[in-house]
Structure formats: C-alpha cells, structure tokens
Amino acid sequence: MRLDRLQNGLWHLIRYGLIVGIGFIILYPLLRQISFAVMHPDDLFDLTVNWIPRNITKINFQVAWEMLDYSKALINTLGVTLLLGTLELASTMIIGYGFARWRYPGSNLVFGLVILSIIIPPQMVMVPLFLNFRYFDLFGLLPEPGVNLIGSFWPMVLMALTGTAKRSGLFIFITRNFFRGMSTSLEEAAYVDGAGHLKTFLRIMLPNATPIAVIVFLFSFVWHWNDLFYTDLFLQGRNLLQIALLRINSQFNYPWANKAVEGTYIQLVNNAGMLLYILPVLFLYAFLQRYFIESIEKTGLVG
Amino acid sequence: MRRSRRLSLKTQKSLLGLLFTLPFILGFGAFLAWPFIQSIIFSVSKLTIVPTGYVLDFVGLQNYRHALLVDAKFRQVFMETVVTMAARIPVILVFSFFAANLLNQRFPGRTLARVIFFLPVVMGAEITLKMQQADYMQQAMSLSESGLIPLRVIRESLVSLKLPLAFVNFIFEAINQVPVIIRSSGIQILIFLAALQSIPRSLYEAADMEGATAWESFWKITFPLISPLMLVNVVYTIVDSFTAPDNRLLELIQETAWAGAGFGVSTAMSWFYFSIIVVILAITGFFAGRGVHYET
View 1 (spheres, rainbow over the protein chains, first blue to last red):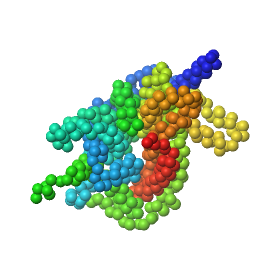
View 2 (cartoon, rainbow over the protein chains, first blue to last red; view 1 turned 180 degrees about the vertical axis):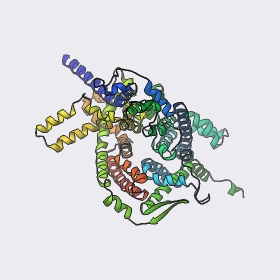
View 3 (cartoon, one colour; view 1 turned 180 degrees about the horizontal axis):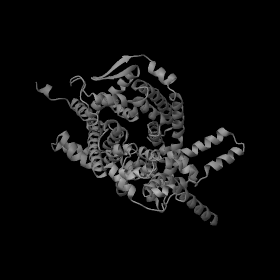
View 4 (tube, helix red, strand yellow; view 1 turned 135 degrees about the vertical axis):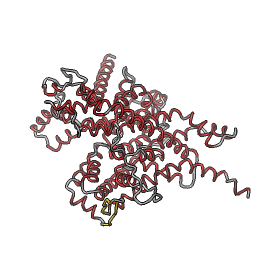
C-alpha cells in the first residue's frame, strides 16, 4: 500500500518534470525574444545580464514600430490574411463538398491529385510559378510579354480561389471527410421541399458545417499570417509585416542610431519587431486555443 | 427532344461533382501540374531572361551533371539533409506518441500544458527559425550553451573516457535535435491525442476485469486502435520534415535559383530531391500500411 503511494507520487513528480522541461524548450525562443525585446542596449555588454535585463525599456519597440511602419503594415497584413483565409475557406468547402457528395468518372483520380498537392514541396514549382506570374498571359490569351502579376495580390488570390494555396490540399481532405460523415437525410429533405443543389449547399449544409469552417478558417489565417515563402516570392515591395521584417536587417539607417550604438543594437530591434509580428497570432491563440486543440477531433479524421 | 434535355440522374450527379470540384481541377492544372511539367523542361534547358520574357535552349542533362559534379555544396548538403530528415521521422513519431499519452492523463494544469505543447502549430516553425537565425546573440547563447546544461563539459569528459567518438557525436547530434523535434511534433500530438480519446473506456475496463496488466492492454488495445492514424502521422511527418523551413537543401535550391548557377540547375536539384521523397514515402507507406489494423 505504502509502496503503491510512493510509486504514484514518484510518477507524478517525473511527469511534471517532463512536462515542464518540454514546455520550457517550446517556450524558450519566445522567452528569449521577450527578454531581448525589453533589454536596454547597455545591458547587451553587461556580462551579469543573461535573462532579466537590468534596465527595462520600450525603446526597442518604438524603433521597431517605426521601422516596420507598424500600424499601416499591420492593417495591410491583416487585410491580406483575412482575404486569403476567406477565399481559401470558401474554395475548400465547395471542393470538399463536391468530393464528398458526388462521384464522376475519374473523381477518385482527382482526389488523388489533392493528396499529391499536399506532398509536392512548393520549392519544386517555385521557379516556373514565379515566371508564369511574371509573364502572365492567361495561357496564351493575352499578347506576347504578358502581364506582370508579381507584386500584386493576384497570384495568391488565384491560388486561394482554386484550392492550391498553402496547405489547401489538407483543408480539402478535412472538409471532404467532414461532409462525408454528415447524413444525407438533411439534403434529401431539402430536395423534397424543392430546394436546388446550390441553395441546399448554402442554406442547409454550410450552417451545419460551422465547426469545421471555423477550424479551416483559423488554421488558414494563422498559416497565411506566418507564411514567408509565398509572400516573399510574390509580394516583394509591398508594405507587409513579413516583408518589412525581412528587410529590417539590411536597411538599418535609423537616425537615432548613428551615435555610438553598434550593429548589435539591430538585434534588439529585430526581436521587438518579431514580437510585434507574432503578437496578433498569439492573442488569437490565447482566446481561441480551444478551437485549435479540439480541431482534430472535429475533423472526422479520427473514428 | 424532351429526353435529351433532361439528363439522367447519374449524369446530373456527375456534372454536379465536376462543377463543385472544377476550381481545384483548374488550379491544379495551372498552378501545380503545368509548373511541374515546366520544371522538367527547365531542368534540361538553359534559361535566359529577355525583354519579352524568357527563352529556353535545350542542353540535355547538363544541369543534372552540374548539380552533381560541379556544384561544390550540393552532394554534401543533399546527403546530410536526407539523412537528418530520415532520422528525424521515427523520433518525431515516438515522441509525439509519448507526449500524447502524457497529455491524455488527468493532472492539474493539463489545459495549460496542452496550450503550450500546441503553440508551435500556431507560431510556425518558419517564424521560430527566423527568430533564431536573425539573432547571432541568441545562437551564441542557444540552449546547449546557456549554462543550464554544460554540454561541452559533458562531451569532453565522455571523449576522455575513451568512448568511441562516433558514438559520442551521435548522442550529441541527437541532443541538438531535441528542440527541433519537440517543436515539429505539434500536429502529430494533436492527431494521436484525438485518437487516444476516441478509444472507448469500456475496452480497458473489460481488459482489467480479465486480469490484463497496463502493459498488455497498451499493446493489445491502444496500439492496434491507433495504428490507422500512425500511417496518417507517418505520411504527415515525412512531408512536413521534407518541406521544413530549416531544411538546408531547400535553402540551397532557392539560393541557386536566384543567386547561383541559375534556374536550370536549381530545378535539376529539386528533381533529385523530389525523387528521394517519393522513394521514402513509397517505402514507409508500404511497411506502415502492412502494420495497420483496420476495424471492420
């Protein structure tokens, strides 16, 4: 009996040790980030300062704020991300519903292509894709040099609309599974009452698919927000947070800094900038973590 | 006349299916299949940018030869990447399964633990990596060097114990990978956790009544019931690690395209890479597929 309790207690201790340890490793970059972001430049060369700065300052945030043109860039990034998230949600819901409800000759093959689209690394088609959008001729319909779509939102909008944007294949897979798990009796009732297919989809099926729609939208939003690859490829020169952050290192000529402040100072600003960039997503996660964590159970992927 | 206007129910359904999935078919054709074919063409051509677009000259396998024989870094980076990634896959699977079991137990603070464990899913490996790369200070003080774990001292003492150097290197390489592995297991933990929660309690109770130990019921109940998701996780992990942002080969491919030997060589490199991914997927899919237990 006593041995049992000892064993139990020991296991509890080990478990907490493991969880705290793993949690620390996960939070480590973020904690480091916060520590550097509030650190005064003087503390950088103070050997006694490792984690907790002696002088806490908000100057790094102010500099980063101005260098990123934060309020404007934030609104731009938010706008683009909301737009792409909404488009990706709409397209993957429609496509997933199509795969779940109707078969046609070759539909299995096309669904296989959805899976294939998940596993092709985007770097594979990066060069041709870039050139196709650089000299976009709508497959020979427009005159010779074509239109330059690089720097506009069209490449990403077109890809989101057609279910080929970042991880769209995964979303199509999830929505298809969800709709397949839904009973067809609702639709049959709607058809008997004289509703058309489109009306049935919009009025009956979509409202019932809200849980999955929330998940697709949240993940799409977060992944688009975090995306550096496509943004860097297609939206160069735009006033977006991602672009500004990538630039921050190269063009550090802020008038404030020409005194004795050395190159290391940029690192502090960089940290503050990174924090400003991920802050919206962290907020979103803090309030909606339930949806993220329960997501897989609702997708119908499991049992 | 009337018959031809009204389509049969079957044709109608086919057309509807086609209509709803048409966006994907178009998108796949335009933004994946066609660029995919183009990348084959590019890999055997020399691409020059001219004012009206670009021209391609057929050069045969020269780009492939360049990637393999001329490029100073490609072979080494290729081997390193494939080995690191392949070694990472089983570790991620085991870890995420272990973590899912941990998070499935009841203990105070479980919600907080889950929130932290899934943070990498939201924060994205790309961002975390950029955070670290942007900071040479941070690199200098990275976990292994921060004084929390005096790895260098341990390493030196192990070497002085006359342990085989390869063995010591392997252990330390594994330790270095720990943060990466933990941070790239988020989705897999989610999937395993959901699978664990879907197993009916009654099965364990019945096994307990029959006198099965926890060890036995793990292997006879838990393992077979989550094995279908094991396959999902295997595939997800492979794809995810081969497109991971800390992948040095993908970096090299991008670098070669924009600032190195050009688009042709870059696409040739990505073709080498893609073939190896397909081979690994096929092999693991074959073996994992056999071990899966399907409930009928």
